[in-house]
Length: 148
Image 1: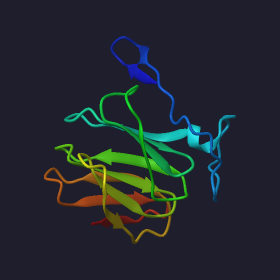
Image 2: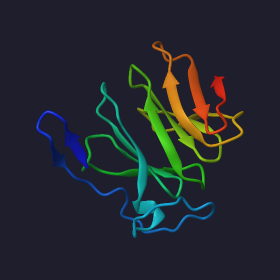
Image 3: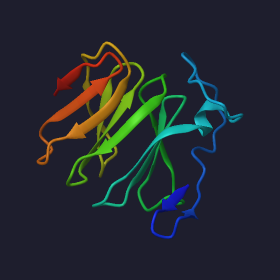
Image 4: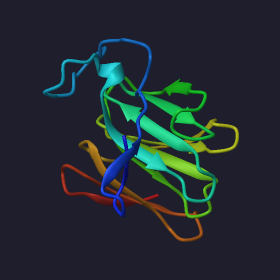
């Protein structure tokens, strides 16, 4: 759902993923009755490029380069659910924080994985890029603040 706070209503709806898959390990707790690939905890819409990224509870991410209901490209580099997604200020990269304690960094234009940040001992809860996009800071459930 895309919510417009000015109008106070939903202005657009989309599905998370058309594939109905169960999580391979460490199932996310949810009150929903949908499969893990169709349930989401994290969404990022980049201000610069308009790319929409949705992280699912089975560890997959779906990328929509031209809006919420546009063509869907799917990536999966972890088997644990996605908790947070953040875009760099210029929109050239986005980072995905998983419950496996790793951050997966992608380039927005090619949608290729360009890096994996390791070091947290718990699930990632917050990601933030520096204003120039050269540094990444993150926080996990173990209250660790790490810089990459």
